[in-house]
Amino acid sequence: MEPVSDPRLYSNRYQVTHLLARGGMAMVYRAQDELLNRAVALKILYPELSADPLFVERFRREAQAAANLSHPNIVPVFDWGEDEGTYFIVMELIDGTSLAEMLRGGRTLTASRSAQLIAQVAAALGYAHRSGVVHRDVKPGNILITSDGQVKVTDFGIAQAVATEDQLAEAGSVMGTATYFSPEQAAGASVDGRSDVYSLGVVLYEMLAGRPPFVGDTPVEVASQHVNDVIPLPTQFNDAIPRDLEAITMQALAKWPDQRYQSADEFRADLLRFSEGQPVHALGAGHDVAFFAADATRAVSTVMAGERTMAVPVMTGPRTDVRRQHRGRAGWIIAIVLVLLAAGGGVGYAYYASHRVVKVLVPSLYGQTVSVATQTLTSDGLAVGSTVSLTSKEPSGTVIGTKPKAGTSVVKGHAVTLQVSQGEPIPLVSVPNVVNMSLSQAETLLGQNNLNYYLKYTTTPPLTGANPNTVLTQTPLANSKVRQGTRVVLVLLNPTSAFPMPSVRGQSTVQAASTLGQDGLTVSSATATRCSNTVQSGLVLATIPAAGAPVTSNTAVELITSSGYCQVVVPTVVGQTQKEANTTLNEQGLVLGQVTQADPASCASPGLSGTIATQSLAPGTLAPYDSSVDVTVCP
Figure 1 (spheres, helix red, strand yellow):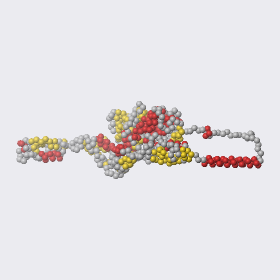
Figure 2 (cartoon, helix red, strand yellow):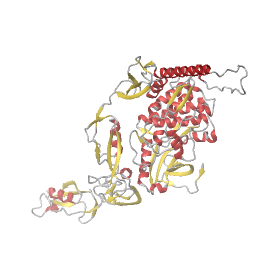
Figure 3 (cartoon, helix red, strand yellow):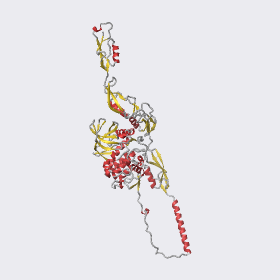
Figure 4 (cartoon, helix red, strand yellow):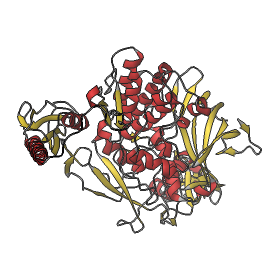
């Protein structure tokens, strides 16, 4: 840890003390939470990025994504906020080290230790995926190991809801770390939880082999290798790696998502089987295998002697073991006839061999993945024709039948059509109405209905009074019937656009700060008080700018709080009836108090019966709002 030269107190609560790490978007500090008297990790966005509303939005979503994940293997987020234009996230301070530090200098971990640690990471990712979040930046630097050996996954800096298109990345750019990219991530394609499985496979590879599968001079070069190149077996760099663990690693690193473990939980289950000494499910486990591509596991057959390429020695010098022959005409004729016969026989045999029909049986491919089925057909001398997707209760991506059927005799080289399961029919759900909801409320409601979402921003809202992070419109419309997993397009106000200042009148200062923060506004350090006859003391009475005035994100808002009731002028009610006196006092914010009978001596004049003779507060004096005025009434 590096002590800071200028400790700063954020939000009058978090005192930074030491620099822990520098990242691509932010710096991480050790800080002291003065309110709860505990050490925390404070992640602070770089100042130059704080001015960019898109980076700020990405930073906000990181905090929101991580705060919604509660798991023993995920670093919890306690708080987030802004202080004088600087945005920060408050996280648990982990007492331990990162996996990157443990692997520094090409160090490796034992097979058992590697499997145990990666299984914990897979447990965290599995939970995140079930919660609708893909990490997309799994790497050793984001995997922390506590002093008691527990794994903590951190930095959901580019986390994103499953199947949601990232509108925060620049066009043509991909967020992440090239060394640990999945092929689809490197290619800029959409990603899901299986992309995290690939990245975690790269981490496991590095733990076992002492280096990642691909290295290069530039990130672009490394990313290209992930897409195009064959991954070398980790045993090429460390022959002590158990065969089963190598098979697990290579299945996680399959080029195509359909050929990897289909979930982090499935990956974790195979790692636990390995740790417990049980047979693993990875393709090629326990056998001699050669990976011709990262998405293929093929058995290598033994090469027989007759199939090997052999060197034949060259005979040198003249032949001395034969007699000289006469060159008569008859000899020449015989020689020519023999040559023609031999040539004709060779041509005939070649014709027969090339036209001989060889038949094979279509093998049973039921339950195999498309990749494995392709290898099976190829090894049997058959080709793969078209692929037909059918609904089925069998796992998605597995073969459920062929045309021709298994056991049919066909000509060698025949193209076989694969019937592949696409899983059970996706049920329809009704799209809920999320218009005018906050983004977080819309996220929750859509998630409860098994729907994803996609954000679009507009600078010309179709509705008046639009605020940031409030859904303006949605597509499909509410009550539409769609398949589970469908993306609902949510239109929000662009963070740089002006919007009406929200009203926080009657809220506490804490509630007001939260309300304003949701709209990207901040609370000014300047404060003021004003008396009020309608707002309770201590609550917000008004704001500067006033409610309804146009503001933009990051505007500092001054809160004016109520100091309590104002002073009012006491009116004259002497000579009025009791009913008239009650009305007069109420109009001034006062109330009629105790009514008693007046001294007859003060009511000697005729016509005073039933009127007010005296009042407890003198007319023209000041009294607190809602004060009581006692009176006497002439009998």
